[in-house]
Amino acid sequence: MSREEWGFLEGRWLPWPVPWHDYFGRSAPLLVEIGFGNGQFLLDLAARREEANIVGVEISQPSLRSAQRKVSSQQRKNVLLVHALAGQALWTLCAPQSLSGVFINFPDPWPKASHRSRRLIDQPFLSLLAARLHPQAMLDIATDDAQYALEIARHLASHQSFDSRLPTPYVHEDNTRLRTKYESLARAQGRLCYYFKWRRNKTPGESHYPPPRELAMPHLILSSAPHLSAVARAFEPATHSGEWGTVRFIGMFEARDYESLLVDTFIDEIALTQRLGLTIRARGEDALIIGVHELGFPRATPAVHHAIHCLASDLIQRHPYMQILSSNIKL
Image (cartoon, one colour):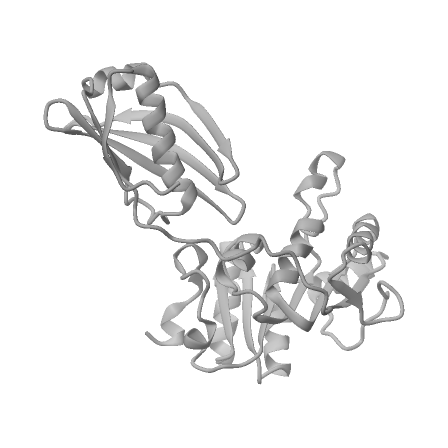
């Protein structure tokens, strides 16, 4: 498949981690821009750093489509666009110490006090960055929100893995970079911009950010099962949490034309979130098979295995005479 036919890449379906040299067709320093918006900065970076492979990460599909048109029209072979959340892209798609630089331009400041927890840059996120950047790799951040700038400065100064490349934590002018449309608008409205130019130092980072493991698709068989209609009547929404993440069973739906139940399930792991369907199907007259529906191409992570186990445990609690006949669950 050619680069032009790819369009942007769907992060949920990429390997963990991605062999980026295969996708670009060459080995080169790897740079990432998180939240590239209209792609203006990203395309300028690609033009100035032709020797580098550049990955743009964005959650907005309109922004992805707009930027992809620009990448194609300019025939930038050193750029790939990925549809993903920032933290999940870094954790799942990038190998440890594989990045030569990360750029974060004007992240959403979430100015309301009740929304501050949604801000991207905090200590855990910096620890994840430290695990993905190699020593001496650069970290550039820009914002026009004064309160957020002070918060970013505080987080960077207190993190052992980063040092400023400047004598100060930030500056208000950076003539080495492209001035984006949003940046020019902020300045025209009288807002100061804050430019952070830091680097990953040689201090060993935290080690609990390995790329997630993908396991075999889980399934489990229960014996002495009641009829599916009885299982559906007894269902109640439930939440299960552990070190592996959180599983929420939201609702249960019964198929009209064949014997099957679908459990609407939300799975939240630190590195990944998935909304998927777990199936409960009749096997013979007195057994049930619990598995994962293929809708949406779910990834079989440890938390998905835990979800199957939790659903079986809930069923056994409501129907104590049931027993596990077989299972490939890895906990």
